[in-house]
Image (cartoon, rainbow, N blue to C red; front, side, top):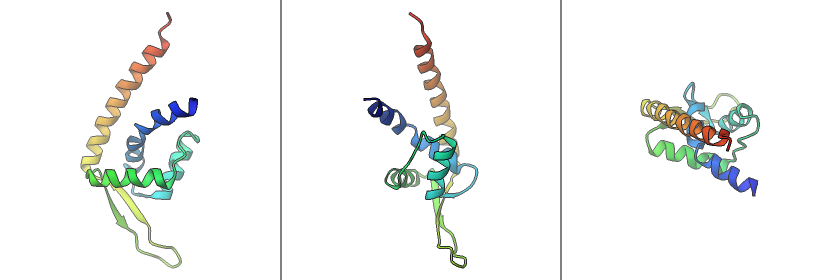
Length: 113
């Protein structure tokens, strides 16, 4: 049962976390997956089938843009995702909402009856 609740809670914040990871510099998919895993200390273990639909939605909404890298030597071209100005504004708003919600949740959980 614990896994069911954890999955639901994570689902709503993945777009925010992906935007946060690409806000400093462009990143390709596998790089996003690895950074998410490392920075969350294995809390978020994304699969390609989870990440790419998120990236496509963010791109459709104008929050990120993608561009292919040039192949150099044996390195294959990679598709990098970069946050847009609209994406930066959305991230700021989403983070604000997240802080308000998480603060409210903590207040309820810490309430001693």
